[in-house]
Length: 467
Image 1 (tube, one colour):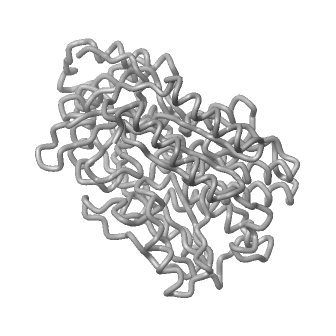
Image 2 (cartoon, rainbow, N blue to C red):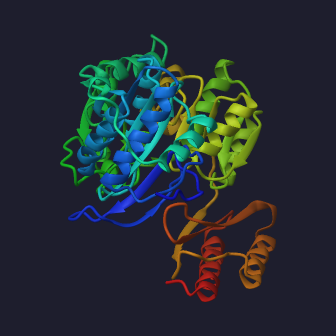
């Protein structure tokens, strides 16, 4: 199989829900390497497992962890990955449905050579993907990714029968991760008296997240905890918090917590029904740590972070930097600067003083700790942040191969930027997963922002033949 010279470490395909044959494939924003992007068929995943196993076998005898979310294709891919690794002589420890950040943590604590996550995160059930973690719970080193790419070019062979890898089911994985999550906040954080609605999006955190908050003393009302393989992220979770909003108001809860399908994103809802996105949660954590005198460095956001959030962070006396959309860019910048806190408006937040990747449960716990220490409600503790109106539009391109560099598009962007001045921003970017142009305009006046966003969308449609 010829490798495509594009990043890998997570590969993703959109599957036909009946035949499981790929309709198309694409890479996603995630922890990426160099290996390539292929359609995820069972045949490819088998060889991928074998290639990973052959490379790891050269590093010494060890084991690989495999976790997954709750989508139906995870059963198939888990089996073929385990078979490929076994054919290369590598033992696998099967974790079953577990949040992505749990696999990163367990890879470290169980001293595995690598961790593999079968998940398409916040995407619908008919998508699936594969992400890799190193022994340290971070992205694979470049030399390993290059070696895997080279191995994929070789014909697949199987070790002698006596050397085949074994598979072991890890039955206490959820309990181990629950205890780790609880350990990330100080022992004086007790949630007694709080009523919390927890929406797990019928995803990987369904049997973990409610117990974390319940064991810390909260009264927990569960949502999205009945996965059937097809309902993951379906009108629920972090990407669709409307259902949680209603439940918080109905139950007169103190707050709501919405995770996505693999548990690395979170948004929260206060008792009044206001939705707090990643910018607001980041601000709460940064303000709390600054007040406690424990904050180190600055905050990393992305090009999508709200201008009001940037200004609020700077008012705390903290430095703020932007990177492209994607957790790999956030983690890279945090590592380079030796900072600890960064994230995206989507709710993908990295607290590197506690873990190595984005973790929705740990982010929510950091916010709850801030509430408890400040003796404030969620709506009270977010004070100090005034977000600018921000309009996001998606324009679907007629073809996957398109450019935003046309003179007319660039002139339209320049005109809007001049009209907004220093109190507004414009961003046009390609989606990392779909043939879409993402248009973002923000400024002080919502009406003008809406007008400008619509004008830009019209220009893009005309120039690219978009729909």
